[in-house]
Length: 132
Picture 1 (cartoon, one colour):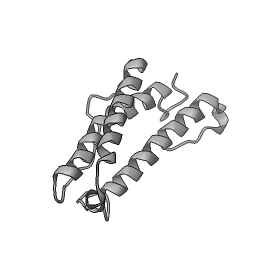
Picture 2: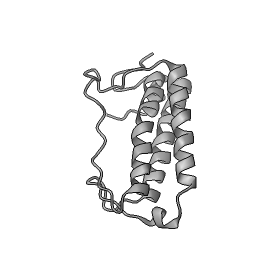
Picture 3: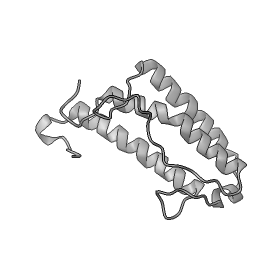
Picture 4: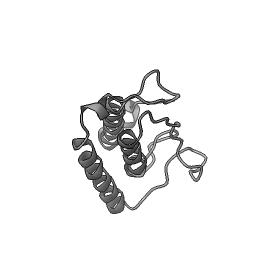
């Protein structure tokens, strides 16, 4: 259920988190494989509707996809030695970029969406954080 204009649904947040995991795994892999990777900003596909919300996946499939990729990511990161963690990369959105910064960004991104899901679940309409 959409709580108002500009608000994603809980299912949209879950779907977004599931959708970005493959891209994040690929970025982690590039830090391992490349000397000085260069990234482009992630812009979700143009197949979203006019409200700029993600396409909703089946929730079981979305949670399974998230878990599958998160385990793959953790396996990859556990095998990364100090030299890989120290690598820098180019990303036009950031002054500096490294595997360490990317992992921090992923964790903050995940928790931001998880907070929004909890807020949508528990908070009365008058008290929802408006992002517009």
